[in-house]
Length: 496
Image 1 (cartoon, rainbow, N blue to C red):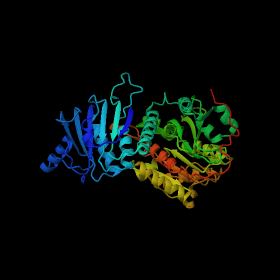
Image 2: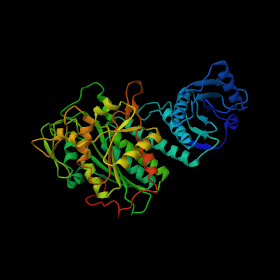
Image 3: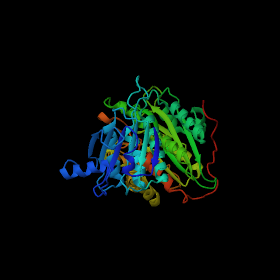
Image 4: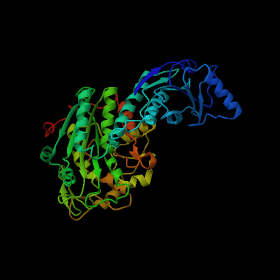
């Protein structure tokens, strides 16, 4: 899908040749003399339309309007959240109607945030998964024009970059687990690197063994699919600038291992690599936006399956950090691959580390599907992530990291156990990861409730790519400089 930004108002939008015109109107918008404004005025006067968020009024063949279809979408007070709701509702109403070109005209007082979220909203509402269908039907939309009286090129480009990143993450998350294997994730990372000039290393089992990643390797033992350890580097600033490191959980299918999950909805465990998908999606956006900062992405990728060689409850394994871990439940495997990735991240001497994982069902119980759980060791980092989530409409909520929550992780047989019981399960999982987080400011995003939807809307959401991209963009010009970046000690050539 191609996006473009035009600086004009509703009167000019009415003259644009396209399949559909979406006019976003607000409660206090100034009445115009164009044909669409006249419809809005008449409909409001008769009580047939109120510009509340998501409310629609549709018309066909309006005299004086070049578009075949007109969709008037209410945006209430015109805030970014309301504009998002309006655009999503309008695009949803036009799906499966052969619409290939759309003009989305924003209110004349729309600000930069509205331009950005309108762009991402179009992409989100028009996305259709077709990769493994015999007939690739449903992706009709080809060209979108965002029209704004106060058009902001920078905000538009940010929205476009975010939209491409979110779409990439959704596509990867939606692929079936026999397609989106650890090997495929590595191939996608290499492809991104070739297209956008990133540095990429993809390590296989032998290289990972030499690095001493005993915890990661233990999880991968039960699968015939070989693990992959993926390292991407985007360098938009000087080598003296310390990078932000993003670490994404890449369990491409999670059966629970020996502690096997119940059968119902187990198919949704293909989404257990959505943390990895969000890192790849963020790099897709970085390739478009090219911000002036340095970013590293780390993805430990493997399957968690039961087998004669699989990890067992009661096993004690040794992590890359040297800490030993008693495995009490093999279905708490995400933290076991992330802990080695967090140790590896230290060699980049990072300005900050953020890990992203579909880690716990407990977070779903706590926050549902509205906000991702966010844990942080640094108040400034936490505030930056909260602000980024608010700006991108990809919300998170800070959760506690009190030391008392770590008491349940104590064990007689190792340095730490991998679970601490049912109470505060998302918190204790974060406390486990904190042991391996190093000295840099660290945050953990538990996206188990936000990374995908079930039921009739089943599919990956692409979250929290928007939050991550917004956070990284906010760091431009303020990132710390702490010596040379990215020591690569112990890495080897890409695995075949």
